[in-house]
Image (tube, rainbow, N blue to C red):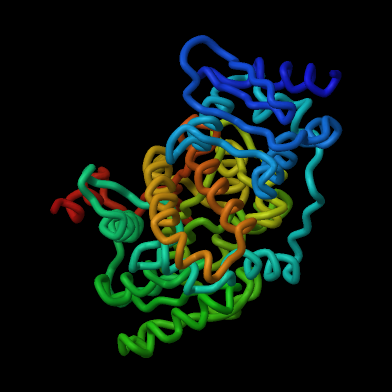
Length: 397
């Protein structure tokens, strides 16, 4: 009886849409006014103690283990969690439900383990639901008609264009992923590029791309921690989706390292997930998807940029672009479930589905954002054009 009362209190204040809950004892309740838009079905009760330790972790594991089902359309999880993020009293935002967080470490050994646990799942897995560019970060939709592949290439060129690059100069891509940005910079912009990653799978893929495209004279990839690269400095530095992995305690070092790798008056474009409300972690994401992950706050990042002796040229939020990117990824993921099920078990599939939809919900609600920081080592914009027009003039289709 006490447990049922607890659940009613938990869900009675958690959503801004009507939600139906089917309980494990066969009874049901509707929370909110109107026809339910989403239904939560508990096949068994999740212990109250586990929810009080950390609701997102307990309920996320409950879904992964098949103890919870969520129905109401293909994006029912996203709709449910968006409604929860938009409600200040919900289990996604109320401090009494997010107290416990797993311990984290970000030394070089743990950083490598963290990256490999996520990115070395296998290139064959990512190839099923990413686009042909193998770009695993926020796309940039110039028009509603852009395909995911077009939008990812838009993003890559948008980043490079912001640097106002001059052919023959050097670029370092910190956390280069599967290499699309660095290889595009070499082929289309005439830059000499170096990419670094801690993922063996990504390193192997990029090395093969360099060889296949005949770019050995202008492109280099290294399997090395961002703190340990031995050469430089570079005219330009890019880093996409990287600082979310370094941990709160290493953010200062990360931005100082960016500065160390830049030549005087060099320019960097740093692109990553940022909370406008301040930094945060999520216990479920930390345990299952991004070990060691920490989403820094906007003010936090800005202060670290200044403390590193760098200056800000431009800041651009791309929240809606990442929401749309994740929605496409989740659709692609579902479209390839037959192939994915040959590679992964049911628990992994449920974990990945809730991750993609939960991330989309977090962006949709404004709980998190993705922001591009254009920064200079030296006086801001010293060698950049006077207005932003130079960026968009290159992007006119």
